[in-house]
Length: 273
Image 1 (cartoon, rainbow, N blue to C red):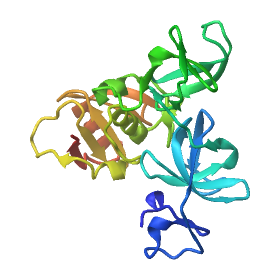
Image 2 (image 1 turned 60 degrees about the horizontal axis):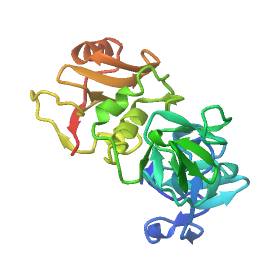
Image 3 (image 1 turned 180 degrees about the vertical axis):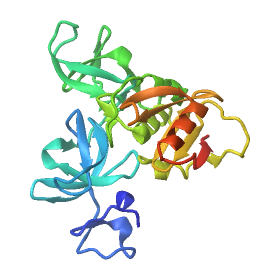
């Protein structure tokens, strides 16, 4: 089983895996949510970053041990470790942040003090409105930066373009830093289209585009360990370590550059929806 998607560690496993894996104990799991603006989802306690999770995102806690929680993220099934102090209780969210970022304020005016950054896909519970401000139990958020749960953007490529010049960060999932698969996942999730967290998993989604067929906007191009989103038959957008940023490129020129750099040819082209 893929470690990233298997809700089991050496101490516990979810009940859904009973009979499929060996584990000291099986648990129903505990509903929780991310309580900090941005948290690294780690391969092991104090280990390397696999991906990131964002404030308000739902997770299932499978095990707690020595200040660490082993969790599974609801958005894509990704499993990993968070510090226990990065978690809060289950959140009755009503809205999500639909812009690359915004802030939580201590009052409904731009002059009020900001309390925390909120990144795209952060979830909040709106309890009321004061003018153009949405009130939550933690503070106020500009209402124009939110969408109700279940309402989405309509074009993943346009969402990706909101992140132009965002710095590249391996395993990143926000405008503070993002990688190729984080950009693709975030752009499609913002349009209500589920996508896994890593490019190798994303490359199995949708349908293969026939060889020789032109690319369409929102098609995905894959290399070994890399993904880009087509903007048109001739241009694409991606988060790339070559420029350490999210950039737009002419597709054929990018393909030639990547081959010349030793990272190989395009390995697949997929169309979602």
